[in-house]
Image (cartoon, rainbow, N blue to C red; front, side, top):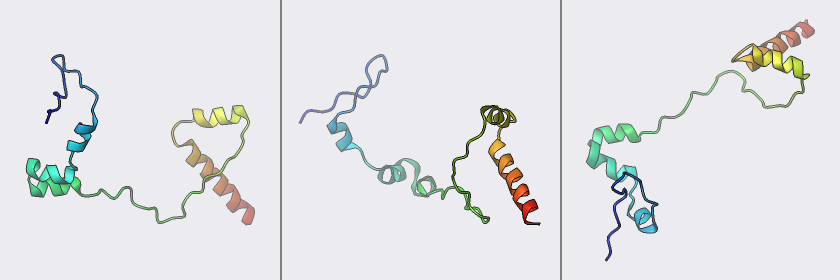
Length: 98
């Protein structure tokens, strides 16, 4: 059986992987315990769970059309401009209910 050539050449260039390389690959869950130890591997492999869900109402995606100058001014106000527009519209809706 012919062995695979090295993954890198003398100049450090990585060669293209072939089907034999992919066949030899193993999941991290098999390899990490031997490399890191069981306890550390379990910590590394534990799912992170992502960002916590909001307890308030979730946002709904929509499309709204603004005049170009209005949109430019909103974006120029910096990061969080969409949240600020949302807050302004919420205040306006509350004022209309009163």
